[in-house]
Image (tube, rainbow, N blue to C red; front, side, top):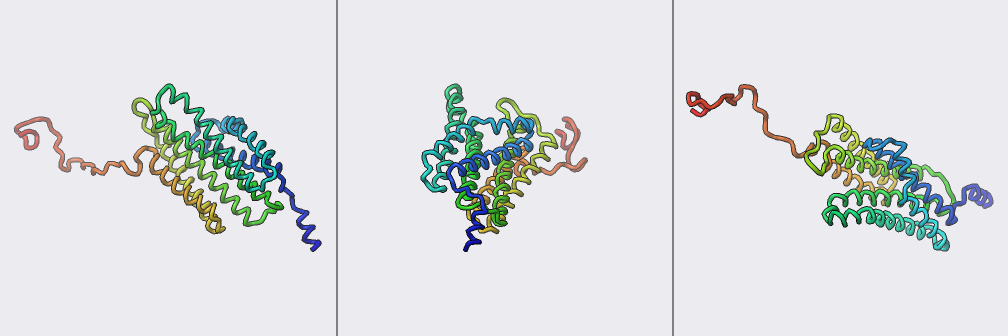
Length: 280
């Protein structure tokens, strides 16, 4: 009995609200930085250092951290699960409000039709930030439920969650690549290069691989949450890869008309009544 008590004391006691809040912010920030780094490397939209700086020096992240501090003070007598739900709700609310503030001026000047252009990126931004917050809140809650112990099963589940986050970032990167190469407001976009097509195939393949691996870990661990989210991420990854392919129509809009073999039925001539098939 004494040895059991001493074993418990050897663990790190993280059951206090402040510890939970600190872990929530730390895990969420690391998840956000990892996702931004993956997206930046896959799309080459910006240098990695600038992308990471923008992820950390982020008004949405700063406001959410303040909300976490306020919730921790007001809900210090709640259990850890209650606080985790409040953290997630605050993250979703901050992301939705921020997206609304960004879109509202465009609606005023350009009309509601601008939502067709900005709606999908806005939803992706909200979902991405909410995912990072959820990973941090749930992870911190589980760590602060009692003593902190690194069991093999917990490590495997953490790896599965990391694979799911990276796979989700790659799914967003597939959409970003399509925007870079195939989307334009005016005129026709330039034809994607072969390198763009290879980059798309690698990114889409990696997104499916990571999300499938996370799903497999979830079902192997009998984790309903990880397995269920994994199935959803796999479906979204597949739909995104098929819908936003590079070049556009890679999988569906291919010309099925067989080419005419040289001299195999076609007649190369101008109008000549004396020749059959040339007007004669």
